Length: 509
Image (cartoon, rainbow, N blue to C red; front, side, top):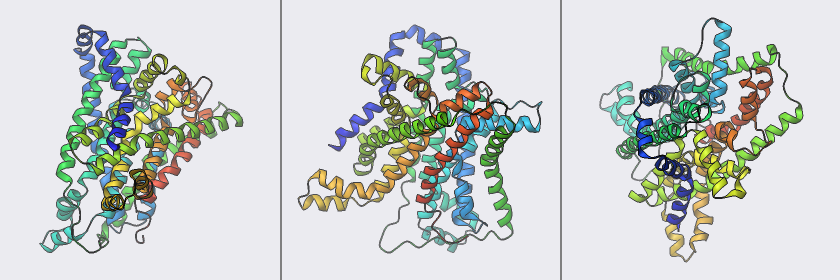
């Protein structure tokens, strides 16, 4: 039953991939090779992979460093910085890109903030919480016994950190790094605003400007192939890192904190600098748009309508995402094996596709297969579920893996039916993961732009689409209320994710 539900869920998630394969084959191999073997594709591939590598490395450095400082050291204000380090998740990458362009223009009007490295900077500052949150949770929950043994053998604090602590959280680093790499490959807003020609911008240009569908399909197919390579690499890392769980009886003791001594305030200064770049720059730019902009915001009714629409479609998308993620995550945790691993990995494939490709595939799906869904919020919610399924699958699988399966086995041996066991035991045990997955899915649905632009019903605007419309015609003051509301609302699920990580409830500081 669980396997059947998981197969059905992954079949739904793979709808855009099936669309790509069918239409790529229809284009003919001659056209495909003509489009593929070009300098333009090679350049886009190199730039996309380079950007993904730089952003992932930057996010791992910032994410692991921040997580270690706030969970394992006596850095001043560690709880405060623990919350700040997660809040960049609430800022859409296209808002951050506009904010940085505005800030750089304010400092030096002659300098143009665009190209590869500005795109890398914006994406690192927006994406490093994808590494920070799981690593912080892993550090809070890790058993300190192995580190104590290392220090008793004469290893210093930094050798212990590099040789023991990092290896304990290696699966969390790999999972976070994978999400960052996939997010970077699929991002359209930031790279488009800072004018960096990656796959997503090339696909959008091919479809929108020249309407070269074959080129767009080929580029999207290459993105899928790159995703498969990333997933294979992450699977190898996961297998090597899954050896650090505590065994034996007794309760786990909380880890001791590393005393930074003279390095306490420089470490706090480093955390403040990162928070200032990730949160301070957008805050200053939004404030400046409010004060100095000449355009006027829409009426209160327009802003309220966009807010209500955003909340409604995001809640619908998050709910549908969790409905598909639950069987896949439970299967991965309860029945580990080749088949469950393949099903789980397949659910990641659409996450690397640009929202514009997923949107176009579902437009065709709505027109030719399920016409009643076309121009409905249900099709938009389906696009959200396809795009953000891995975020919920990972949360459910992690929670289910920590819950002892023996309780379910005992219940079944006492004559409980599978549905009753699922409702009374499995769901409550997995509830923390379901909550985290819902929060993360809701947060990302709120920020999603390309698929929303393509699939929203006629006449329906969200905060993201209104923001994009105004910034597209340089009406920054008119865009400011939508950007501010988007960040404030998205900060709520971000706060819930921080609370669940355990950072807020441990010790003083």
